[in-house]
Image 1 (cartoon, rainbow, N blue to C red):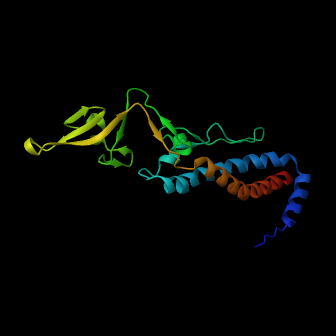
Image 2: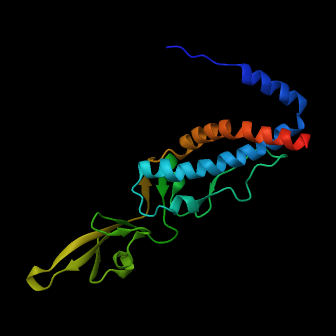
Length: 197
């Protein structure tokens, strides 16, 4: 197996860069922002659904943002961040412990029904009818009289550990590299054209 590289385009780019060094930072900033936008779409459309069961297809698109963290000619850096802070994205990426803001976490069993926005309203712990709480477990009483039984719905915990199951950081790096390679030549060419005009 062998690889060949055609250096012609690189030499031509080098000559153009030498002629217009002031345009490089401008083109790079625009390319970084382009790449970040495309990366957010790819994380939502490729990475997220490949690793989790997606009930709300708009969740990750709504969560990821670059607002206030975009690249400029003076600052060649762009940050994609979780503006909602609801999906424990850092723990999905790196693994870690999730703790409730107050009280205990109610961790659902497979019996709990879920919809596009998570647990359906009438299945949430506070909404359960004929709820029985004992020994750190939440049950729902089903049936009447002799046929009555308890169905385990939730276990109560002070914290729970999420395993690293969505490679957001790894894919972010790969997608940004691919998208920068696509965007920078176009943005640099546009910058040269605007300079000449």
